[in-house]
Length: 118
Length: 113
Image 1: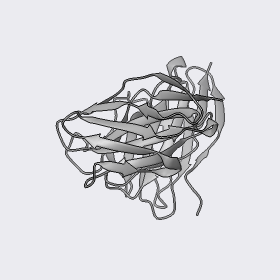
Image 2: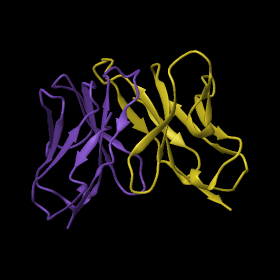
Image 3: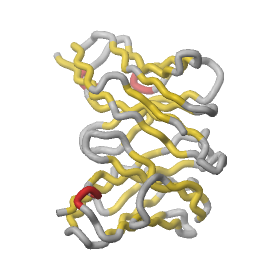
């Protein structure tokens, strides 16, 4: 079974400051890792994903994340945030179903609310 | 291309009633998954369907059921509604294999009174 822990429930920052949203996961099998963003009263939008290869993944809106297998982490970063980045961010892992098939489910963390102040 | 669509947008039901939520995937996507997102929490996996067959089921009671149609659209049914079923129900579509990202619809907000 997989689990995801987002270490901060809320992160307040000022506009143009850097930000890091932390995510740790646990799994007994190889997983794929994702970050999604959710704006108020909307569904989830994919920011970036890690499947394999380079551990530094670049996504949309200037976000990037680094996969660290030894630390089982997948932290999300942005060097300079904007007011429009205010939203809730979810880290998720995709692993195989209990039957071991490749049609996996997403397991989400509890979310981190990023609030960007002017 | 249109994204994932869900209907209805909002729904208010009474305890004990039944509800049906609908989802149309992105064209070309053969997999549909359903998630429940309770306020203040991350989404929880309910079902995944691929090519009209159930491929995965989360830890939800038998009151929850789903199906996928030949055109790959899907329905989620919930019987004997409880107050605790109040949540945002999200549908996601993908190409199928877990390597592929899931694209989410806007959700259906269900309120049980």
